[in-house]
Amino acid sequence: MILDKIIDNVYGVEFDLEDEASSMILRIGWTKTPKTKDNNMVGTLKIVFKTVDHVSYYYDKVPFQTFQELMTSESYGIYLNKHIKNKYKFIKIIPTEGKEDNEPRTS
Image (cartoon, rainbow, N blue to C red):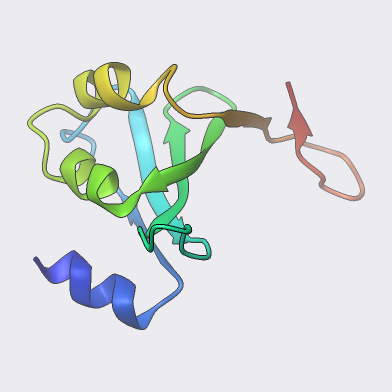
């Protein structure tokens, strides 16, 4: 798959989804982290939702294969709910507007 070659040569990837591609998800990204003891390629999966404030979730230690399966799934939302949500630790980021330091807040 072409994503295999991309990931081998860069730190991570991010895709803006077409409006028709998902009713809930705006952007999906995956960033490599150091390989695990068993030499599996894992990373941080970033999901940005089509909410007013573009809430982002960062899921920790998601295998590259899971990212590939998400990107090739028939429905991003169904795959996310079935295979990622409640299975990986995550942090939720809510962007702030008007703050001088423009730091995101977490919840």
